[in-house]
Length: 467
Image (cartoon, rainbow, N blue to C red; front, side, top):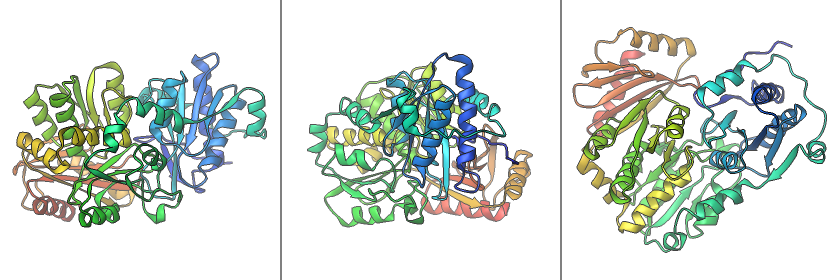
């Protein structure tokens, strides 16, 4: 049997179900993981779970059986779970690692395999590389059933959703939140966050909170274009004052204000820094991915908070959170972690922090955004994902890295940064960035301008120039 090399991208290994994401390949990854764990641990334990995607249970059980067959104890989640539930479970149950079968925000045809570390966040880049190096070309899939390993004491079922909900209840005053004057709408995007909000905020108005592994053919990514049903409902329903959305495995966040206007991750990061530092008097540095707005640096300067910029991939931010005192760590894609919680992206937790901010101050999300703009100025951000062949994608990035672009239409730039992708600081005060996706055949164009029209124009001019 000829097998391809399995590569972990920005966040885990992702592939198309039944094409490369097969039972056999999942078994190969699990075998590499088992070998890696057994090198350093006598009786390692792994927490395993899956989200709402097609065949999640089959793939999770495959990983569990391979791990058990190799002498690794497995704590297996019953029913679908979110990525933050696995990370919390690994930490609380003193496990050595976690596995989430998820392709996060990718289209429904994808599934994936994410590794979580003992610290309660993404496994470190070093550990991921070590597991990847041990993935065998061939593997023997055990014939024994899950029940067999349960009887042998190598497998135990656990309820991660209950554990997560009980933990969240200790972090917020739900009596106050459930009496909030700001009625919430929540869109689970058919993802793994769907039960949690039902349980914690029974008055919330719910969208797409049923189990649909095909996501109605829509990638479960919390972007404005994918959330129009909720946006329109908020705009036309006066009592709905805020909208929260989470992605397929509920680690990413999107928000809407009372007008049904999208509040993106850049604004959410700024709001969290503003609330935690100014209102809650919390301290710590800020860690942001390379694609996050420079307005974060402006706010950190205003509050005299140190800021660190990382390559793209939350594993880099999580590593800083484990080793240093971090107030907020976040990515442009909506993956954000805050102090007082696990070093992991968590869309529901972030949403509850900002719902608490609104409820305690009696201010709407729009009013709180204005507080932020008073410090950093108004800005508009947009991202364009171009589906291009890998060869074309690589040629464009190579040209950018070789300083092959002098300007983009009428937009000139004064400096370039290349931490991860290529970022152009424009003479109009905005910026633009080119980067190849680490998980899909996609070239991303990121842009920030002073108005929506200007930002869309930047994207258009860049597209014309590179294509």
